[in-house]
Amino acid sequence: MSAFTDAQTRDYYESYSDVYALIWSQQMHTGYFDRPKNLETACADMNHYLAAVAEITAGSSVLNVGCGRGGTDRFLARQFDASVTGIDISQRQLEEASREAKQAGLDKAIRYEYGLMTALPAADASFDYVWVQEALFHCHDKNQAVREFHRVLKPGGRAIIEDTVLLHPAAKAEVMAAFGERVFINSLSTSAEYEEAFLAAGFRLVTKNDLTDHLASTYRAIADYIAANIQELKQKIDQKYWPTLENDGGRERTLKLVEEDKLGCVCLVFEKS
Ligand SMILES: C[S@@+](CC[C@H](N)C(=O)[O-])C[C@H]1O[C@@H](n2cnc3c(N)ncnc32)[C@H](O)[C@@H]1O
Image (cartoon, rainbow, N blue to C red):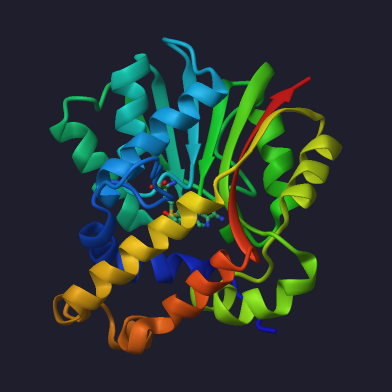
């Protein structure tokens, strides 16, 4: 199996930025599909869902790790009057997020900083919440990232994780070949492995919810969008990534893994003891 690096992850997100902006608009994560709706609305609804599950309180400080284009940051600043710091490995995503925050008049509430989740550019015990949405699965040293989440949280602070997970260890090789290697991931964790890592770092589990049905609806929406817009999308991306769009780019196979309960999505909330 390949040993992908942070540099490859960064290159992937820098190159895919325009494509993801077309597919996902403001944010790139699993949508909340409690009824038929478009992907953008479903992604916004997922933010509401996670904030409710984590019991985000008004006026709190939030570190959004792997913030991407910052749609969630603007949601948290608007909805909860939160002061938000977004960090990401991709300068390009950070520039776009900064521009959007400024345009929305939220640049006083939201700040951005380049950083890896394994070495967060943040002081000890400085945040009420750490929000990590569809980003931890990309990390090449997940245990170190979890220790960093613990370090930067205030006592009693909460980590909100929404992530793509392996549902059965026995399916690991199949899932990595069909999905993991396409997005430069060395290893996908199960929800139980995440729980183990967080408990070892000094957290307690508050809530755990399965979101796999929502992941299936999200992948279906993405596959339909790409099939309908492939020529336009190819113009936005380096040629070396064309195989990820052409001939369905392995998406049907990935969707099948979700439908077979091998690849899934989970929401986990932990509290720093
Ligand atoms: C699927 S996107 C999710 C973005 C955002 N959380 C959202 O929901 O819209 C994953 C993001 O994680 C970032 N990322 C990947 N590995 C990272 C790392 N080691 N440290 C910080 N950010 C990382 C990527 O650049 C990308 O913006």
